[in-house]
Length: 143
Length: 118
Image (cartoon, chains in turn brown, purple):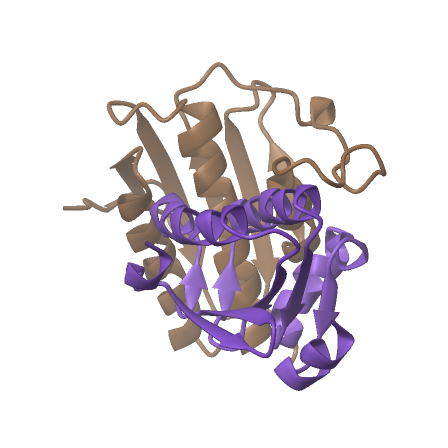
């Protein structure tokens, strides 16, 4: 069961185990909230994709697939924006060190596209200094 | 055996192997793994395969799914086959475009257009 708490005036907070089923359930919660507030299909697609990538990164890379480690998610969705923090228990990384996956020598490498997609679909993507927390914001598009 | 996989449907039309992807969301590693386990043997068992993936039912996929497609494409090329994609909706095509994978894969609007291109 997922337990939600209020971490600030506005953000809901929960901790999940590092598995995709838990992550998907949280992803669905956030996207469904946005949908209920009238976000359009393109915004919902963007939210789902960015969440999927960020959660997969936290589980697979940050927590190295260790189910005993937790992913912390804090989020707030209102009629104007979805504001999301995702943290893992890993040692962190420097996003600058992630190579551009669209160059000729990297284009056929099977992985490394998650951050590119997050940045393409969210209005803000920023990492903590340690690199184990990502903050993403999706501003609701005008209809 | 590929035909036992609930995630795909395999058809043979003329000399083209058409794979209908049945999941609306190809996001989770388990789904991608299941699809891979069905798809890769299809390529392995054939030489010079003409393979068409139909994305008509797919609404969402992750970068891990793109990774699977890249590996599949590499295997098809190693076997001197051809891999093409069709019926990719606009939102998903944008993902190919952002990642510049629209330059790697041949993508067609319809199954008919793709079949004609082989």
